[in-house]
Amino acid sequence: MSDSFHLITLEGKVCLKRIEAADSSAVAVDFSAPALNYRVTSAVKQQGLSKAVGIKAALRPSVLDATAGFGKDAYLLASQGCRVQLFERNPFVFALLQDGLARGVASQQETVVAACQRLSLVNQDFIESNIDALGGVGSVDVVYLDPMFPESKKSARVKKDMFALQELLGAANDAEALWEHACRLARRRVVVKRSKSAPTLGTRAPDIQYKGSSSRFDVYLTPKS
Image: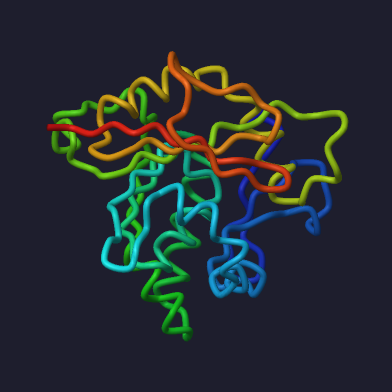
């Protein structure tokens, strides 16, 4: 679907837009967005993600986000003190992340700057990454996966940015391979975000589940000796 989209610059932001669509349909990565930063201060909205990753009073695990997308969950984790490495294989989405991160680091909001300084980007397919090159087995505490859900006919209206992402990337057809690679790498756990009714990934049941109104987090413990 990438031939249907292009990148443009609007109001100082790199944006993704359908070639024949109006500029108002364009989307960008904006870590300074009020709605996103409201989630940073809303314990209820972050609770499932924080618990799934294993954040505790004295523990901020290192995280590898293998399916970065627009980086919102990674930013929420970084805002809580986690260092997050974001893998994104799509060049258009990676360009949005690069621009969003550069603007975030240059923001006038100290909390945004601090969170963005904990993020690092890799333009690579996580499945094709060499575990030794990443530091070896157990070099990262948590691998986080959010494979694109197949579009549901029953779903409520999708937000503009997620609709664009779904159109550009389509549903993930390699989610099982992502899970297997993640389990080999993670020192503590693999966290998979799924729609509430979606089947689990992998060859074993999750050790823990945190369920929300429309999605859930499946946690697979992967302790390395």
